[in-house]
Image 1 (tube, helix red, strand yellow):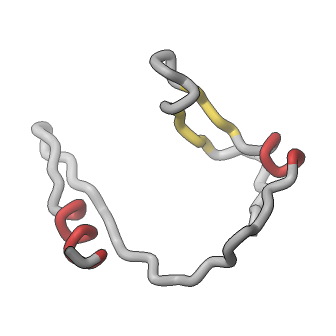
Image 2: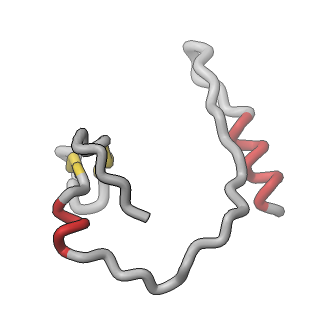
Length: 69
């Protein structure tokens, strides 16, 4: 199954309430092996879930306008 097929399957998802999903394939290339510094990681707004917060979490905007590239 190709990436395009998977993205299209995800994009066709709809909740019982009728909410739709937007999905698109990002074919960009990204550098491998980039290390994140402790300072960069400290700026990530990680909100751990009550159930298995080590595995289940959300990443919210930091609010400080920092862009990591």
